[in-house]
Image (cartoon, rainbow, N blue to C red; front, side, top):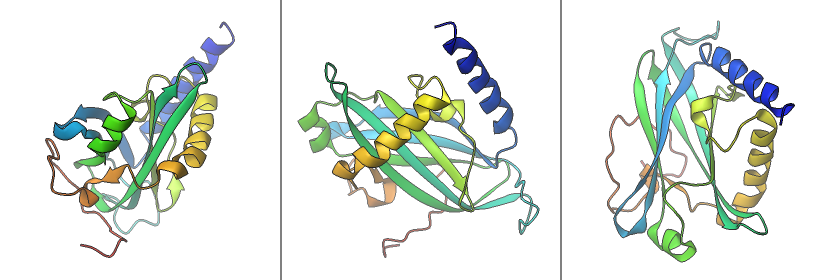
Length: 195
């Protein structure tokens, strides 16, 4: 335990100092229970100045990709998890803008697997112009105390979410059901052929 504490402390110092330099930061992540057992994941984003010297305009950040990973424990004794992943692309955000991105797990899946509102693990990965930003403390669950566990979680989620591919849906793919409280949506770049 004494060896782990310095790692955790260094992780928080590192991510705290790097966040100030990132183009997009995560202010918070919330999970909400909706009617018919749906679960809503809300990611609150803030846009900072664009640090790239090649930016078209320093007050605008473009080509933003938000990828979310969540995991629910299926079998505590065997340490088995169900993983879900989804992503969206945001066209652009202006400095000091705040936007919300929403993802949903369908009620029949939640009911079938008896999922709680809050997952055991989650992480919000952000990339700008295909460059990954540094991990942010507010972008991950408290059950991820250091970079080693984060890397392991992402690796497990990438391989494990194939089984549940497309079940965690961005807001624009959700059918006309109760989507919960929504607001401050960004402009999404959709590649599914629908607008």
